[in-house]
Amino acid sequence: MSQLNSTQEKQKKGFFRSNPVMNRLNKLEYDATTDGKAAAYGRITAKTAYFLLTTIVGIMLYLVLNSTLFAAQPQTLQFTYRGFQVSTSMMAILVAAGVGIVAIVAQLVAAFARGTIPVSGTIYCVAQGYLISFTVFTLIKGYEYLGMLALGITIVVVLSMAILYTTGVVKVTKKFRLVVTTLFAAMIGISILTFICYLIPLTRPIVSMIMGNFWISLGMTILSIIIASLFLISDFATIDHVVENHMPAKYEWMAAFGLAFTVLWIYVKILDLLIQIVGRGKSS
Image (tube, rainbow, N blue to C red):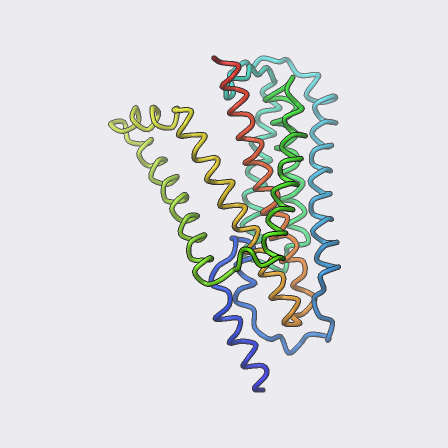
């Protein structure tokens, strides 16, 4: 019993915050109903790889639809996306919007109903892959190499964060989590405030002018990448917590999806950064 109390106390003190998906792991308590099979690094790694591979399924799904169903539709929509001239069909836009909604819903379900993560996490990753493919092969058509470049940079970032964590250069303390959470909360607050101000006719022109500024947009994207990278280190610490404290194997899915979620977050933001930079060059 004393060992059980000690484990619970470590959980309460050692994990202040994590990313939105990992956050439920911070509140883990000893599960007396476990069959004795504890979480393991190998299985968490395999499940993380599974989620990332399902993202590729989403990428391929869009490519198939784009060459069959969408190709048969009239390309009636022409608009500019971050300096890139886009020509596509209304159906492609509507399906992408629908997939975006599915991704948001799946993310929320995964965050609040951890038992659904094998399914909701899979749906989220497939949807995210679809949106990535739509961005790379339609919105920035002709510059598809940016997708591969973003992938290479993401791999470098993930490996760098792993090295910083495993070598102890960066230690995940309560203060570390507080700083990361504060930065994340500040960004969310700014986004909400910006949205509200945009809805007000008096402040809408000011918001449009600020958000349309290239350097402000670039700075916000870079800040997002930094925050996501710090969350990645926090995720590594959470996985260590789950495995080293011999938590039940059922939590492997949550840990794996949390890690995959952060990696995809980093990739999307790096891709967005590259699109902004190249799009700026095309416009100038």
